[in-house]
Image (cartoon, rainbow, N blue to C red; front, side, top):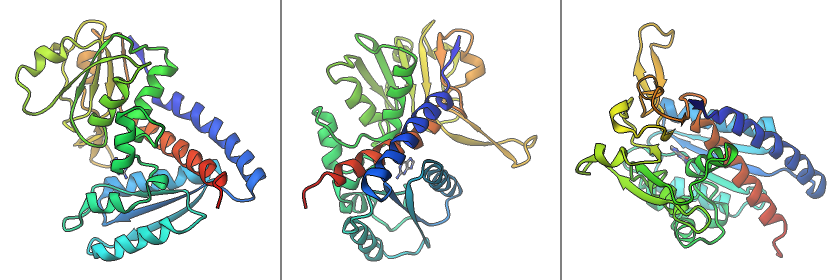
Amino acid sequence: MQVLSGKEVANAKLDKLSIECDEFIKQNGYAPQLAVILVGDNPASQYYVNSKKKACIKLGFAHKDYLLSANTREADLLALVEELNNDKMVHGILVQMPLPNGLDEQKVIEAINPNKDVDGFHPINVGKLLIGLDCFVSCTPNGVLSILDYYNISTIGKHVVILGRSNIVGKPMASLLIQKGRDATVTIVHSKTVNLKEITKTADILIAAIGKPLFVKADMVKKDAVIIDVGINRIDDETRKKGYRVVGDVDFDDVSSCVSAITPVPGGVGLMTIAMLMENTMKSAKMHSTEEI
Ligand code: GUN
């Protein structure tokens, strides 16, 4: 059984981006810049936003962080997004999800200039992705493809089953895998799927993204399948200093004896999400630097 290290793939990507960033600064006299907005005090979101900031610092990217209170008015949030849309030195804008109750996530996503939408959440980018046009690709599914590529795991002709139909992972993951060149046969299963286990058992590659800790057990996977675990769940654990530990959507210990390869949690897909975000920000900076204004 092979452990597919997201850490290794992410580090390789970040090393490359660090060199690209130095070259970009030499050529343009400024750094690629990411603006991150966090509304409220969700601990997991705080952790992710902090990780994104650390990645910017490590690579030499510029960054702006906006930490707004949970009772921020929607109009003020939209005004901030608009200000960043108009700031020529900002190349990527990310609003950390989920937003607190009372703020319309879709409205905020659609307020972001699609050319600075490094999350790939704007309907323009989602639509372009579906029909195979160049666009900003949602970071987590793009990170999954990078892991598969790094380990030479082809998806051509394979049956890929995606557990979960979220806008952030499941749907864009399916869009990517059905494109020419990826050539997978894709099934999405979700909470209302009948005979879920029978379907997941036919997967050559199983991608779990449902946010249910340790959901996938050995009796749900085919022998020698490749398992990609997108889940990041905190579960109580009195033996840990923090009182919790992080687990995926897959029960690693249960499935590891029957699969051919699997991503661990932590150290798997999660690290790739940040690496792909940095890649998208670099892409955006390059795009904006060659724009004729
Ligand atoms: N919440 C969970 N994942 C993500 C992500 O990739 N981007 C944003 N903006 N919010 C998230």
